[in-house]
Structure formats: C-alpha cells, structure tokens
Image 1 (cartoon, one colour):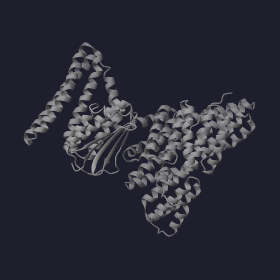
Image 2: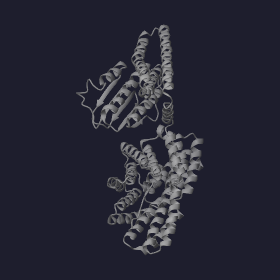
Image 3: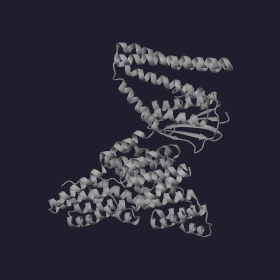
Image 4: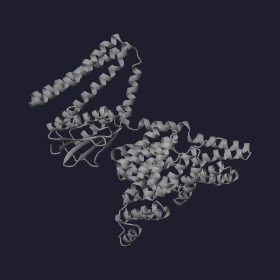
Length: 623
C-alpha cells in the first residue's frame, strides 16, 4: 500500500524578532553577569534593555525563564512610559508564545504593538509588529489576514529593512507560497532569503533560509539536493547550540528520507527530533515529529501501536490548532485502519482528511496570495498592467494602430519641439551656451535616432502588419530617454535622495527585464545635500552603463548596488558573474566612457575583478 505524505513546516516564519534580538545580544555578558548587573540598576530604560538581553540568553533552550524576564521588562516599561521598551517586550515575548502554540495571546499583543508604533510614529517598530502579526496569522493558516499584514509591511522592509530582516521576510513569503502549493514562487523567495542571509554573514538566518530552500526543493521532487541544505542547517544549529534549528533540521531530514522510502534513516531522525520539540515547547514541531514516529510504526507493521500513538497525537494537534499536522495524521490513521481490517473506519478518517485539506487549500486563499503578488511593488505592477492594456489594444484593427502610431509620432515631435524651444530661450537668457549645446546634442543623438526608427516602422506598418508591436517598444524607449533628460534638467530633483531614488528605479527596470536579482542598499540616513547638475548627470549615466554592461556581458544572476555617503558619494556596482580581463577591457565595454564621466566631475572610477566584477564610482560631496 502506498502512503502519500506531504510535509510543510513553516520554519521561515519562526521568531522574526527573536532572530533580530539574538543579533543584538550584549557580548561578553553571561546570565550570571547580567543578573549581577540587574541587582544594582535603577528602574530606567537601561534596566529594561538588560532584562530583555537576559531573557534572550534563556530563549533558545529555556523558554519559560525567557518569558519571566520579558514580562518583567514589559511591566517596567509600562511603569516608566518607555514605548520602545514595551515594543521590544512584545516582540520577544510573542516569539516564545508562537513556539509554544499560544497564538491567541500572541496575536492580541502584536496587534497592540501595531497601535503603539503607529501612535508613536516608530517606523522600524511598526515594520516588525506588522510582520510579527502576519507570522501569527500564517502559523494558524489564516492566510487572508497574513497577506494583509505582509502587504502593509513590505514597503517598510524595502525602504528601511536590514539585510537580516529582508532575509527573514523573504523566508516568510517562501513559507506562505509553499502553504498555498505554489513551488516556483516559493523557490524564488527561498533563494533570495538565502542570498541576503549569506551577504549578512548571519549563521542563524542562513540556517533558516537553508531549511526553507530544502523544503522548496522537496516540493519539486529534488530530495537529494534538499538533504544537502538540511544537513548544512543542522551543522549551523550545532555550531550555535540552538535547539530550534536542530529540531527543525531533524524533522525535515526525516521528511526527506521518508519521501525516499528509507525508514532506516527517517525513523531515527523523527525520534531524535521529538525530545527537542518537547524541550523547547514547540507544539508544531512536536506534532510533525509524532506523525513521523507513528509512520515509522506503520511501516514496521506495528499497527496497534501506531493507532494508539495517533489517537493521542491527533488530540494534541487539534488542541493546539495544528491543522496541517492533523490532516497528515488523519490520512495515516486511514491507512492504519485498512491494515487492521476496518474499511468503514478507514473511509471515515479519509473523509475527515479531505475536509481538513479543503479548508487548507480553498480557492479564496490562492486568490489572496495572487493579490499579494499583484499589489507588492505598486509602481512595477502598474507598469505591468499598462502593458497588458497595450497588448489588448494591439488586437484592434491595424488601421487604427497605424493612426495611433502617427498620432504618437506627432505628439513626440511636439514635445521635442517645445522642450528645445524652452531650452533655447533659457540659454539666451542665462548665457549658458555650453549647456544649450550639450542638451541639443543629446536631443539630436537620443531622440533623433529614436524618431527616425519610429518613422521607419510606421512606414513599414502599412506594408507589413508584423511591425506594429515594435512601434510601442520604440516609443517607450524614446519616452524613457526623454524622461531622463528632463529629470537631469529639473532643478527640483537636484538632491542626493532624488538621485538615489532615480538610480534604484532605473536599475530595477534594467535588471528585471534581464531576469537578474538586484540587491540595493542605502545608508539608514543620507545627508541633505544639493548636487550639481553635472554630478547628477554623469553619476547616473555611468552607473546605468555599468549595470547595462553587467547584464549584457557578466553572466551574473545577482547584482548588488550599494550607496555610501560619508565625505564622498560612492556608488558600487558588483556582479557575481565571470569577471573581466582588465587588460583586455581597457577600450571595451564602455569603461573609457565611464572613466571620462567621472573625470568630468572630479570623481574617480575603481575596477576590481574578483569573484565577479566590482565598479566603484565616487565623487566628493562638496562638489
């Protein structure tokens, strides 16, 4: 008899804030040192932070003690009206509650944290509270609510989130897609989570990302590949002495060998995971470990023992609202009943399994996750919707398309003419003859060639309708070029913040079209400075050309763009591709153009070719 078994452990949603907290532990102080420090401290914000740090020391292996110190920190914060302390108490306290399966209490506290953070205008704390609330809903399979809170949190994660927070958030999204049986989307987010974790050199988030990636690979039938990532996570758990990671790795290892039908390997894994799950009060892990142990009994034909264990395990899973594990236990109990010669009982358990599964995978949930994907990154999605509208418009009669193309052509000519007239008058009034010649040359080079191509395509449209789709591409490219020139000329866009925002949007569009992942980092706070027009123009064009060259020549799958502001403005573009031969590339790939642009503004270009290619453009902020 073949037993189908699908295992989904949402480890990526585990302890979003606890991970952040672990990274903030005060090094050099153990439990006894922190307790001695507490005994002589005044009742102030420092004592709150020390109580939380002490709780973190206990959280991994003695969660009840952690709750005691977190609760003490919360009471003290309330007494001295310390909002940040109250929010840190809630974040750490609810992380432990989630592991213990006390989701109702955790949800109430996290919703309270959202209200406190919004009232106090605390953006980072609001981001974390929104994600922690989504985590609780995701734990309890309320995906509609989880989607809602992730949608609210994602813009904050993108703008102010650290590498660690981005890694964990993408891990949560990976788990959400896995719950909804969308493996390709889950795999994409798992790889992004691992990339951010490795870039941050954080063993904890790397371990979690490995678990998520392994689960995605198992979903796609790549079990042997998954085992490599699971074993890596287990080694990191041992290195960190973290029971959570070790327990999760063991359960996933058992699941992998189960799918390969190797009971000699999966039964020991489940048996080893069970005491760890009970030690840290992880009800979700305990449920899946119990199911694995029962399954081992089934394959050993110990049917009565399996039935007894499943009866208690199913009650435990229902008590703690673990629908996923409960559904697997129901399916296994159905097979046990057949083995015991009870077909009617087997049919009853199978019907209950089907009912629970339908609740977990109803169509409305799939619709919700599609809504998340559609609404995330609002500007990008608006462009995609516009493109869909254009595709529908192209289905109209070819004569209408030709007329529309001619109308667009006339409009573009009018815009170019008016822009050139404005620039001509400005040059005459201000005497900036050199600026006028430069803009006229760019108008001629960029827009002139684009208009010529558009005119050619319009003429060919009359003879061959296949050229119609190319009109839109030509017009869109021309409009983008014109928008760049307009942005460079706009004095209202001469701030450093405007340059960074425009760079980010342009690079994202280039890399998205090339199928290359982008990591874009900015300082937590940028100086409020005004950049000369020449600095903005040359820095933007140089960076854009570097990204374009990397897309075209590097063979990379990830490009990292980092903004650094100190006494100078530095923009680095690094890919993980094949690298370049610096000696042979001296006159190629536009390096000469980029070097000249930096020299024109008193800046510098550095090139390093190790593990890919790094181009660093820098210019003094005083310019």
